[in-house]
Length: 139
Image 1 (cartoon, helix red, strand yellow):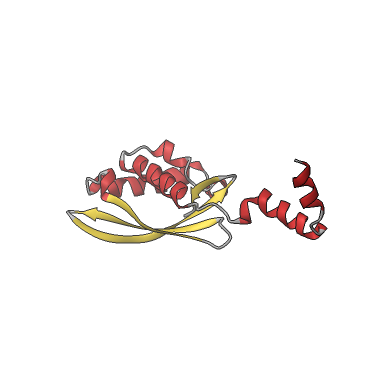
Image 2 (cartoon, helix red, strand yellow):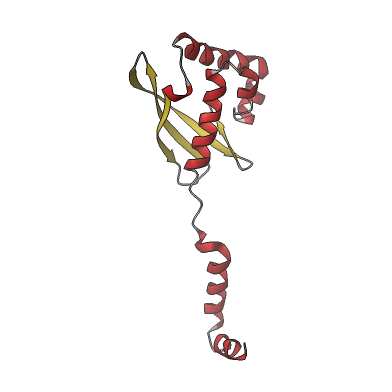
């Protein structure tokens, strides 16, 4: 232990500060959010596919919910859910093709496809935002 202390005491102070900073911050690289976003996306669309509107509300961006109001949001989600119902969509008929996080790490575009009558087609990408450590759909 004494040798270690002697070794570190010979290093310039600025180098010690940098060493502590980088070790303490884990290099400063943010975690890859794609798995979290994909999981939330699949849960959200799973509820819509099953016609579960109330649980789907919990995936909408809180600020959007406040501005639009619960009744309006339920109406919009019902339309999305009915689209799935009309085409007899199952969970496996919706797939995430690509997730493109922003540089800031607070939003992402989710590119996805739907299968209708055994034909896959791209759907308009969805915007997802990070609020309070959770990912939310932002219409």
